[in-house]
Image (cartoon, rainbow, N blue to C red):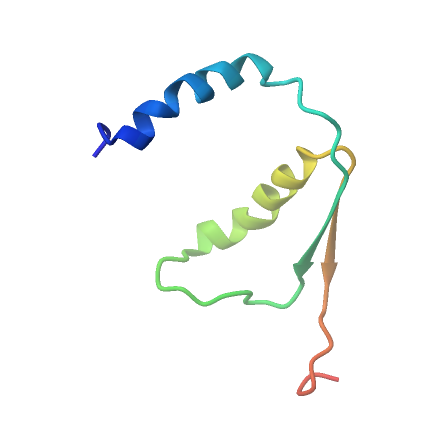
Length: 80
């Protein structure tokens, strides 16, 4: 339903913000990602997707300034 009033009313806002693409302020981020494999078991996850996941995640973190990706192993009661 692309003719819903909410979406039409947001068109001016979205098109107005497009002029600022590439001029975003510096936002620092430290992204903590689980180092354990497999991270999540879904039926739609293919080996190709799993192989590309770290690069995609790094690309996301690189959009921030500075962006730092840290792979961590959480301490769980069952995993001391």
